[in-house]
Amino acid sequence: MPETYQNYIDGEWRDSETGETFDVKNPADTSEVVGSFQRSSEADTNGAIDAAASAEDEWADTPAATRGEFLRETAKRMDAREEELTETLVREEGKLRGEANGEVNRAIDIFYYYAERALDYAGERKKGAADQNLYYVREPMGVAGLIVPWNYPIAIPCWKMAPALATGNTLVIKPSKEAPNVLRAVFECMDEAADEVDVPDGVFNFVSGGGEEVGQAILDHEEVDTVSFTGSRQVGEMIYEQATEDHKRVQTELGSKNPTVVSPSADVQEAAETVASGAFGVTGQACTATERAIVHDSQYEEFVEALVEEAESVEPGFGLDDDSTMGPHVSESELESTLEYVERGKEEGATLEYGGERLDGDEYDDGYFVQPTVFTDVDNDMDIMQEEVFGPFVGVTTYSDFEEAVELVNDVEFGLSAGIVTDDHTEANRFIDEVDFGVVKVNEATTGLELHVPFGGMNASSSETYREQGEEGMDFFTIIKTVYED
Ligand code: NAD
Image 1: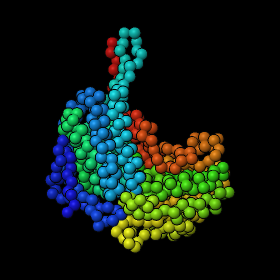
Image 2 (image 1 turned 120 degrees about the vertical axis):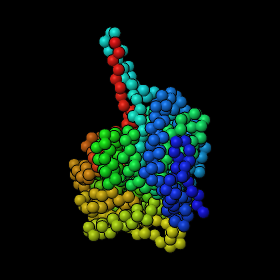
Image 3 (image 1 turned 90 degrees about the horizontal axis):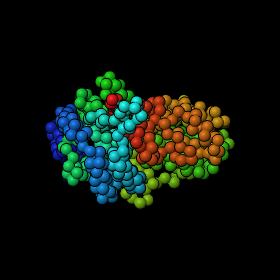
Image 4 (image 1 turned 30 degrees about the vertical axis):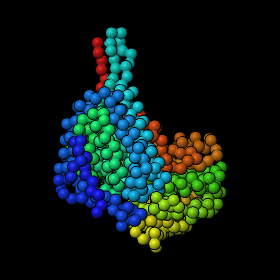
């Protein structure tokens, strides 16, 4: 029997009032059930929000040093369980051990980082008139409703929770149905740390279940002051609309269609490795994954050959096996969606240069494995070059001069992460200036982020209201009060 896990509400582990659970399976081998989780209702979610609202004032009045200590104590416990958290993540989401370990360590570092930031993020004194005390303070917004996706199931929740808690907010978080287990384990660490530091019950709450029940209840509740959502464009746009109508502060970080330009000055092998890493790393299941390679005419054939070699060298497999170099898709529906885009690409007249097949046979039979896919002869207006394909999938197109490359880069509705591989510093600077993307990478894959700088997209990739991560990540959770004191 798989283990059954509970919600964490008002300082204790609880079953859902529905009495129902759902199973989470290992996407590399679906005969393995990772655990059963509460199929929570609106009433469960409302209970968690009420608890968060009751704890709001006490937590807001807790000294910043104590809040920081709580985050540090949580990080220490996560650090002590690093290996276990890594394996938990691999078994529910499918990343390779190294990728999962990187993500777990990022989550730990985020807690340490905001433990320090909690101390010096308060406000500022300004010069006023001679007899005037003029300053502003930052106050917590109140109850944060956090809705997160499955693809970074520990890092994304932590980069929302840690700044919210550091600035004195209480929170209710809804994990994805595909990968709730690693966040549940973080809650065990938070629960222990809360005992040690004496954190009031109700400050942090975890409610598992469906978007239409738990997610919707978070949106509907009037005590929720901020909604921070990361996920698909479709759901995000609906959330943004409702939250703004209800006068909640909202941020949405959504999908993308990220390009990498290969300059005539680039080393072709290096460019192919950069694109392959951005496209096939984490099975292409990153919002920052490279899905478009825009290659100068003069380099095209050599580049395609090198990229196909990179794709051929990928060894899909279970993330804890040492010889695997790419994990599975997280679910049957995500796998199907990628395969549908392969068919769409063929129908649109693109050339399937490599891959595009589901893998079967022995080790693949019970998992959601695909080959990495490379399309050529694509036009930028094809669906496969405009819509997000959340898998290891890249289309290669050409350009003849820099202006054309920038036009192609910007000719999508999304705008999260754009890269260029170049040996020309002036060209790189022009690229940085001219692309409408929230993250720009020069000679690096479009994937990969640092925790102490702001992160967010432009256009359809983001609500563009607030950035996440870095000190700027705390702005979303606070409101400024300006004081004039004579
Ligand atoms: P998703 O939109 O399907 O789900 C995200 C979360 O929203 C889940 O917890 C889900 O249960 C919940 N949800 C679903 N329907 C809801 C509803 N009606 N009301 C409230 N909540 C609801 O996204 P996903 O498949 O989990 O994640 C993949 C997507 O996330 C991709 O598009 C990817 O690009 C994007 N993403 C973006 C970033 C970023 O920072 N820009 C980072 C990671 C992932």
